[in-house]
Image (cartoon, rainbow, N blue to C red; front, side, top):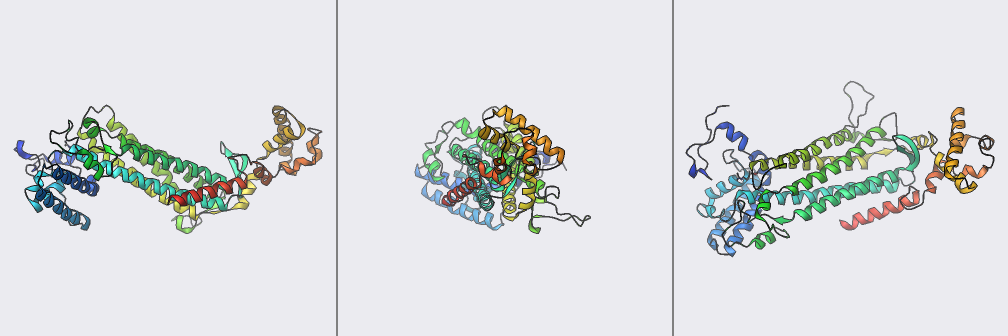
Length: 469
Ligand code: ARG
């Protein structure tokens, strides 16, 4: 790279400068390749600002009209892909303003009255993040809908429930899927909360100290759909906790997605054999013809690294940054865009896989019955029917499990005699609770895995989600 300037003086702030920047300066300073994505928000913000400036007679009606129609043309060029971006003009704000000047001439220079790029970028970025929150919440709701539908279908499909990834107690697949609906619903809620908190307008904070011009900040805030203007100009230009909240919500949602993705990877392995993904969501191996790889699930799992990394990136950029604006803040956008894109892709891929996967109920049920998964049911029966203290029941059950293990049989395959050898008062009623179906059916207390509960919960979610749409 040459250290010769590859551009002449900057037309936006060149007055004090006699030379253009070194090439390396331009390379580190320019953000246009990233922030061009804010063009719609930038034009929307400028329209609101120009309209307000004319309302309070800071600019004339003719200048406002020239600016607004010029912005229309700039928007057309950007939409149509004919806009010529310039690295020398650093960012989207100066690119758009320079083009506006070419189109409308002098009035373009009046647009930046009572405004700075500092409040401009803070406003644009809030608008973008606000929309990203809405879209993330909508994507999560579509995923919840898909999960709730599969849960309803599988309200009575028995599978092993795990703790420590060891078979613990039987549950139903529907119950398992609805656990994720609960998680994703809180994730969607976090995006909505973040959106509500970020909905204050920085525009009019100007560079940092506010402006001496008699602007109407309520007018621009209203026009842009904000609840109110930010009350402190220093806060307005320098805060990015709105983006941090978006990134935190994304990181938590991605963490939840990674857990479900991991389960799909496990379930579709031949060792588990609980489910399979169709060709549409599997890839083959170029060397091992027998393989069906759950690449989409693995990539959803891995996107978490990118998304959590973005949160960490922006936290680190913000740490110890003195008020008010510093160019460090320009690094906020790449991280945020990357995280929001990765999350949208991961949520869409997961929604696809949830609709796609075929459960294998026989394998799940067989696995649920292994590992003495109804041992707790046996102990509970001893408490209920024989009045044993739970600790004693636990001990008796342990001995019965040992007897079954020694014979390599399931608990319900032991004879009554064999059980009575451990505890004489056990009677044939015990066989009512030892099957996996009986076990899940018994868990009727609110929040439990009984198929009727699962059906009710799945239907509750399906109709709640339909109503929201
Ligand atoms: N591109 C800049 C950013 O994203 C815009 C604000 C520039 N302000 C300044 N004082 N240099 O932060």
